[in-house]
Image (cartoon, rainbow, N blue to C red; front, side, top):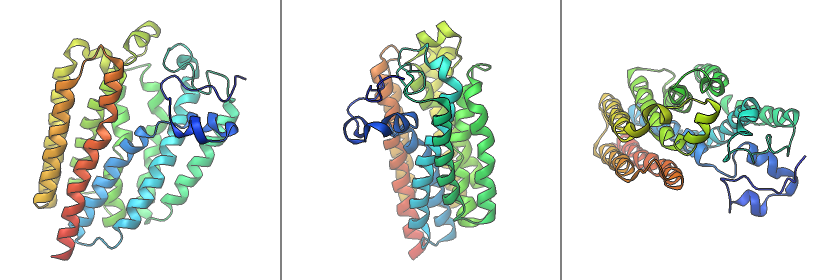
Length: 311
């Protein structure tokens, strides 16, 4: 096996490389704890739906507890998902410049060790899930089907980002399941809006690897859209804003939530205007900026929930 201190090519200057014990670094890198942006992006729809559902219920008494549990759950389940993705993609990752230094293709850990760490994180996620009602538990478990099939989609469809959207947007349903014990039209429309958002930002992300992906036959919306990416992003980001806006209207939100949506939309427009698909570093920066876009919307929804709970 290679030296565990060897860094992943696209993750430098992070706490794992500088502070984590050497023995733990391959495991933390496997689950992307050195690059937590994916966990934040998984978390955003969870927090949106938790705040929106609390506003509908006009009760924020449980919201802080739910927010914390969703935070823990998003990080460990994204970690487990990344481990599963790397186990299934280890041979493909070895053929891509940006990913060949990841722990599995680099030989820093074995498949057995990676799977054991996956199980450990999944058990922590299960412990979080068991804090919720039965309907929410079943809803959370149902997401595992999508997570399991996602790594294989890039081999068979030009639209793997849609499947990623189905998985990464699941939290838009979970907030309603946890808080209200149901999934209604508002939750489903919020879910659809989040899926459109994920397709957009992951298309930006995939533009980092289009040349290598073409060589090894990996499909993506980045390769599909090519020079039409700006137009495609305009469509998907506009769809995201419209659908989320419909969800807010169905939920009867007040002005802070609408301000949050406007800020979210403005950020997405800035991404489209700034994007240069031939600049991988810029693509990564714009992709990461979606955490801030999501937090802007969450802030509006959180203020709205607080206002409605005290009125």
